[in-house]
Each structure stands twice: as structure tokens, then as C-alpha cells.
Image 1: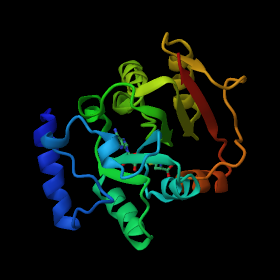
Image 2: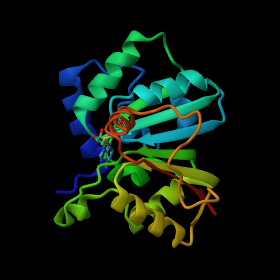
Image 3: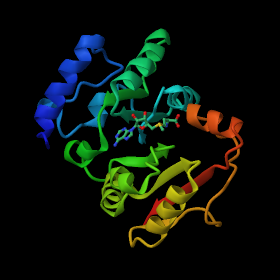
Image 4: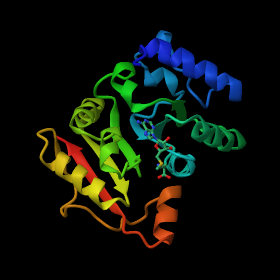
Length: 220
Ligand SMILES: C[S@@+](CC[C@H](N)C(=O)[O-])C[C@H]1O[C@@H](n2cnc3c(N)ncnc32)[C@H](O)[C@@H]1O
């Protein structure tokens, strides 16, 4: 059943309270603050803002935020356990004023965030749903590409990484044949990217000898 944004956030915020006290490292989204005003959410004057969707255990997102204090990072994940793990890590650190996380699924993004908000959107190792009958559960599809496009500023980038060849090539095809993105790499994709902060999944997949597909697309 589709819940209204307001009901959805009431529900997940009350779920969240069962597990941890909401604090200023995690954003409790509700109707009062929609659409999100990131200049109020972040208490700094950074101009660049990046979104990571499905940050998992939060390791790489936290490292990115520590490495780039002049960039704001907003991370979402739909699963409670991932939020809890990332929040535990964040709570142990000195306050990072350029990283805020929220529990959210992508289905609500365009309802809570204004168009042309992000300089970059990152998705690392989204669930590939390998079985054909589960392909409908894949987050990235033609409709979602339009949402990504609307959330990005002009010239903004979408970065993607996955070890799943078939899903990666499907995504490549969707983006390069869309009228709203162009490939930002001169080759179709890369299998290595210099100076990248690896995610937990990336480390595991590389250790298992998997080939990784890195892609980058620019909003036109
Ligand atoms: C395979 S894990 C990858 C985690 C991390 N990015 C990494 O590379 O280690 C996929 C993550 O995306 C989250 N996720 C899946 N679908 C999502 C959606 N539609 N909206 C938000 N998060 C989602 C899952 O909860 C999970 O944490």
C-alpha cells in the first residue's frame, strides 16, 4: 500500500525512536519540513551538496565527508539496521557538520526534495535483484532516471558502481539512450577508478575477484 509522505515519515520516525534517540546527525523527516531546505538542514555555508542513496554501513560516506569538509553529504537508506550501524559510527565521531543521514526509500525522494538540488547523486552497489521475476524491484528504471535528472542541478553527475554485469549494462543502456543524461566517461564504463573510497560491498566483491563496473553520467 502506498502511504502519503507524511504518514510514511510518521511511521518510520516512530519506528526509529524505538531503536535510537533522533539527534542532529539523523534527520527526522515529516510534513513540517517538506520540501527539505538543505540550507537550514546543514549548519554551514557549503554550496555543493551530494546525495548517496543506499549507503549501507555508512563507512564510505563518512570517509567522503571527512575528506571533503567543503561539500555537504546527505545519505539515505531504507533499512533500519543500516541506519543504526551508520548512526552508531557517526555518534562516536566528533561532530561532522557536513553529513546528515535519513531513513528513506527512493520512492519518496521527488516528493520531499526540490528539483535541481544536488550536484551529484551516488549509488553504489544497488541491489541487483538477479532473478528475472524480481527485476521489477530494481530501483533504477526509466522513470527513476527522470527523477534523478530532476533532482540534479544542470551539469550534475550521477555515479554508479556495481559488480553485477547484466544490471550494469542495462543501466548503461538506459542512461546513454535517455535524452536527459550523457556519458561523462570517454569509455562506456571503467573497471578501476583512481583514488576512490571503497564501500563495504566493493571491498568484499573485489576480494572475491569480481569485476566492478563504474559509471558516471552528466545531466544535460
Ligand atoms: C547491496 S547494499 C550496498 C550498500 C553500500 N552502498 C555498499 O556499497 O557497501 C544496497 C543498500 O541499498 C539500500 N537500498 C536498497 N534499495 C533502496 C531504496 N529504494 N532506497 C533507499 N535505500 C535502498 C539497502 O538497504 C542497502 O543498504
